[in-house]
Amino acid sequence: MNREFLLRAYEAGQRDFAGVNLQGVNLQGVTLIGVDFTGANLTGADLSRSFLTRSNLSEAFLNWANLRYTKLSDGRLEDADLTKSDLSGAFLVKSDLLRAKLSGANLTHANLRGSVLQRANLCGTNLSGSNLRNADLTRANLNWANLSEARLSGAKLAGAFLTDVNLKGAYLNGLDLRGIDLAGVNLSQAKLSGTNLEGANLSSTNLSEAQLKGVKLMRADLSGADLTSAYLDQANLDWSNLSQANFTAADLHEAKLLGVKIEGTVFTSALLPELTRQYLSMVASGDQLFGSGHVHPGQVHPSRVHPMR
Image (cartoon, rainbow, N blue to C red; front, side):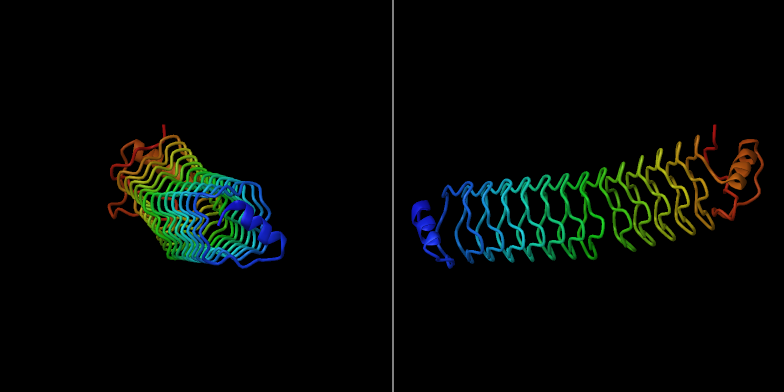
């Protein structure tokens, strides 16, 4: 089917185009609201700046398609193949992308607010600057995805795969991320205030300059993490593992540090609760009172700790 035939049929009132072959067709800027493209072949098609609001693209082939700034709000794209497609700036608010294939796709600055991305394949996808507020990413594959500066407030990430995901500068305020595995992930400059990371694996994670006010990190693993210049005012780190972590110039004002494990932890120039500050001063002068490898209220274990300077 070519462009002219499709548009004439649409103007005549036809909305059912399920299974049609539109491979490579130029549909730039067209209006096709509420059409049914179920299972259609749109591989390599140009749909940039088109209006496809409330359309059904379930199981459609859209790999390598140009969907830049396309309006797809309230759309159905379940099981659609969007591999390597360009969706930069696309409007996908409240769209259903259940199990959609988006690996290697470009979704920079796309609006996916309230969208369903359960079990979607977003491996290696570029989502930098995208709006994913209140999106459902349950069990989505985000391995090696770029989510730098993405807005994820209110999003669901339960069971998501996050190996080597880039979350630099991302907005994750107030999320429930209990027990999540973010080991080695780049969260530098991320906004995590009020987030629940209880029991999370953050070993070797980059949290430098992250905003962590009031974050819950009880029993979290922060061993080897970089928290240089992180803001942890009122954070709860009780019983967490801080071994080999770097808190240089971090703000831990009013932070809770009951029972934390610190061996080789760096607190150089960190802002700490007053009692902890006093104990570090004693450590610097050579006094040693504990050998358990754990911190008690206001007390820091001296073993291989770098004191404030």
